Length: 164
Image: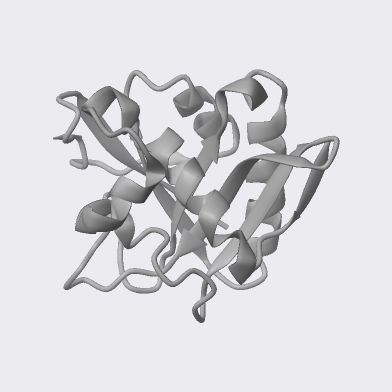
């Protein structure tokens, strides 16, 4: 397994991992390219490498199979797990063949270790039925009171925060 810092050249991989993370296939999308036209998703990746962006890429045998990244959002154009303008929101995606291998945990651990040096907290949004919810809880994320809301897929998501 490898984990390395994400670079601007990894933007295509981030789009692919956003496709996985957003359950886009279940919503009838056929390609990560379709996310570019979905404003509430596209801003997670569009122009990756801007000031404040931080991320990691990982996989096996030199093949990237996942990424975890975070960005700051503006209150005018917030993301799903928006807390405030000083708290970046984390996104993570792992390709199906990388799931259940410990890659997601390794990506989260590496990203959070790096984020501690720059930020006071990190937020995320997760579907209540997503198995990753338990990982987030193990890493110290807690549910933001009153944050449960319906998501575009027709289920319920919750915002969580980890304060360093």
